[in-house]
Length: 84
Image (cartoon, rainbow, N blue to C red; front, side, top):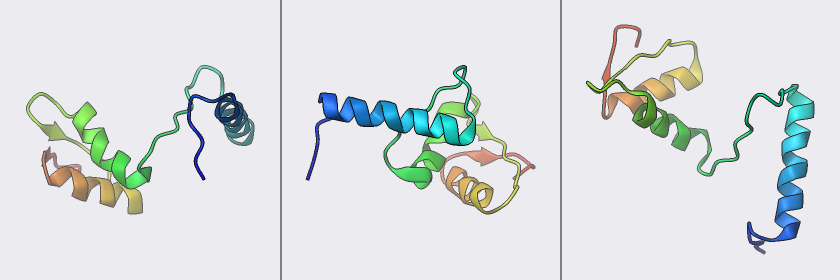
């Protein structure tokens, strides 16, 4: 079953979901809540596209599981600095 993102029903669900996240995680109104498709794996591959230097370099701090996955994804297209 699908629902269009342009319906009033969807808008109501999205507004409620955002408020629930804000309440649960104490997210202030000065921060945006983003609902993205693809999950964390897709976002890990998209982040270097937006944040790499003009020379195609990226730096990561290897702080655990997700950082390691992000580093491996970034190495496919970019030069990782020593912090990798």
